[in-house]
Length: 232
Image 1 (spheres, rainbow, N blue to C red):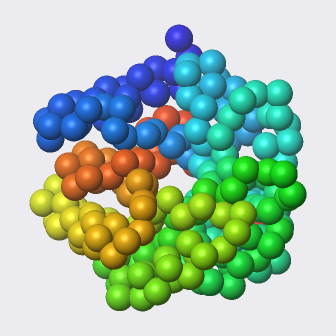
Image 2: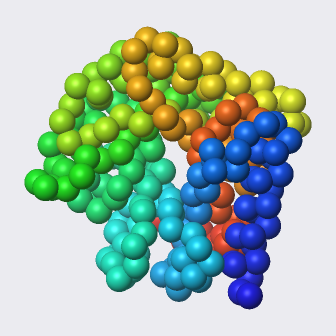
């Protein structure tokens, strides 16, 4: 068993344990393996261990990887910032975009989705705790944005995504994640049909699952520590 395969098994065990603790079936939570800064071979190792959904933050790096791995049946999620000049790459190459925080970006993704392709699955990124350095729409503006996105062709609104500031302990993490869960429930109560609450990472996946996350984004616990290249 490779290191990545062993790590994946440990993460899956964490997810199953958290689900069992909080009365949820393990299949209710999707594991998204965050492969940013790791090359195609690492993704191949993860795929050999049964992982098919991968998250990427850096769009051009991701596109190169997607092309290199086109022989594998993988599902690609854009979880990093999407600037206007990168929407075409996202629309053409990804299956999901988690980080939509402006209507302009959603409109461009809709317009640039290739003809004949399945709708692009979209999550609205919400700055749930008001972090000053975090992207995302304010919680009070999420409904209006969601209603506008739902009306667009070629995209399918699936839910919301959050990246809160690190919490000091489990209870504090749950308190923030429960705000996202409450917003998710409120959006559904307002008539939207959402099924994805994308929240929780390596350090707080148990708290996220306790609070209702349906998709956790885990990188370090699977692939190891990262060396970030200089980006311009």
